[in-house]
Length: 273
Ligand SMILES: C[S@@+](CC[C@H](N)C(=O)[O-])C[C@H]1O[C@@H](n2cnc3c(N)ncnc32)[C@H](O)[C@@H]1O
Image 1 (cartoon, rainbow, N blue to C red):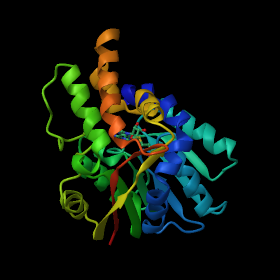
Image 2: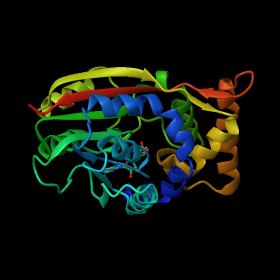
Image 3: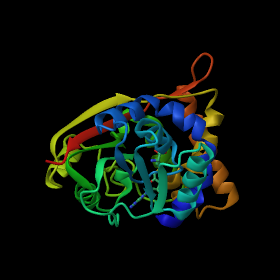
Image 4: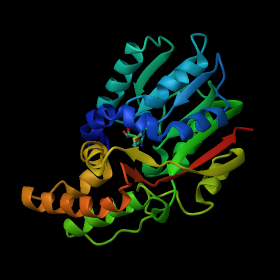
C-alpha cells in the first residue's frame, strides 16, 4: 500500500487544484463537523499531499496546530513542502500508519480523515487510534466514498480494469477497497464500536467538474492508486486497450460544454465522550 501511494504521490499533488475544487463542499463540511476552531490542535490522518491540511491550518490559525500524517513518505514530503510554501508554521507533517498513529493519547481537540479510512485494512483500528488521540469531548470527522451505484465513474474504472487484467470481479465492499465503508450503516457501527458517540453520517454529492473526459483520465492515470495497481502488470498494448475502453465509457458523462462525473461521499462526524 505504501509503495503504491508513493508512486501516486506526484500525480495526487499535481492535480491539487482539481481535487480542491471537487472536494470543496465536503472539506468545508468535514472541518466544521469535526469542530475545528481557532487555536485547536488537529490531527489530519491519511493527509495525502496536504490539500485539506491547508484549510485546517487556515482555520486553526497561528495559535493552533495541525499534525498531518500519512503512510506514504513521498506524499508526506509533498504535504510538508506545500505547508511550508504557504507559510503555515503551525503545520507538522509525519509518516504514520493510521492504524498505529504514535501520538500522545488525549492530545488533540479534533481529528479528520478525508478519503483515507476506506483504504485501511482494519478501519476499526484506525478509528480506535483517532479515539485514543482525542481528548474527551474532541470531535472526529471522516469522508469516504459511498457505493458503486452513486460513484459510477469509479465503478467503471474498477470493473473495466479488472476485466482487462483478466481478474475476476471483486466484492465491491471488500476491506481496503474504494467502497469498503459504503454499506448503509457500516461506518456508523464502526464509529460506535471504536467508542465514539453522537455519530451521524450525511451523504453529499461531489460532482467532478472538468473541461473534458481527458482531464479526468489524466487525473486517474497519475493518481488513482487502486486502478493503477490492477493495470500494473499489463503490457503496453493491453494497457492502451484498457484505457481506451475506460475512456469510451466515461464519455457517458460528457455535457454540452464539458464533463461532469457524479460522485457521492459519506461524511461521518462523532465525538469522544
Ligand atoms: C485518496 S488519498 C487522499 C489524500 C488526502 N486526504 C486528500 O483527500 O487529498 C488516500 C491517502 O490515504 C493514505 N493511506 C492509505 N492507507 C493508509 C494508512 N493505513 N495509514 C495512513 N494513510 C494511509 C495514502 O497514502 C493516500 O495518501
